[in-house]
Image 1 (cartoon, rainbow, N blue to C red):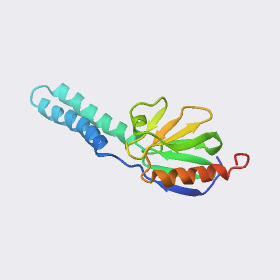
Image 2 (cartoon, one colour; image 1 turned 90 degrees about the horizontal axis):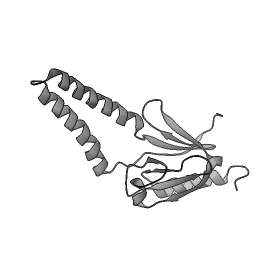
Image 3 (cartoon, one colour; image 1 turned 120 degrees about the horizontal axis):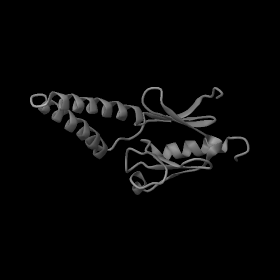
Image 4 (cartoon, helix red, strand yellow; image 1 turned 120 degrees about the vertical axis):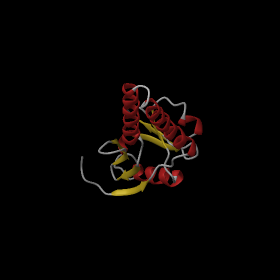
Amino acid sequence: MTTSSIIFEDTPRYDLWLKLILGGVLALTLVLGILFMYRDTEAAIVLLGITLFDALLFWAIMPRRFQIFEDRLKILLGGPLAVNIQLSNIAEAKPASSRKVFFYWGSRFATSTSNVVEIVRKKGLNLVISPKNADIFVERLNQARQSQPGLA
């Protein structure tokens, strides 16, 4: 992939309901693991392992940043993980309904019901994301797409 400069960068918006669900899952398995410590050590170890696994999984798959480059959109996840989408493969970027956060045929990186952006791809699964500044993000992404040779 060629080196290109960042045109725009935004962070995801995380709604309270998502924080409560993720925190609740971790708290439930952690508390159960601690409670089982006194009755069944093996079950406690399994539950604490599940808590650690879930925490690492949430850390790895939850989006950290959305970056628009001259030639691609990059969704940075935890650690070295990222999703790169060439701008030439994006058919459309538009604000979307909050229902698409829960019911969508494609990849969902949306973490908020109020700032939903749908990325329609020419090839591959479409996706929804939740940048903090959704309107500015869509505007900058569409500007970057328009500046691509052969896409104007």
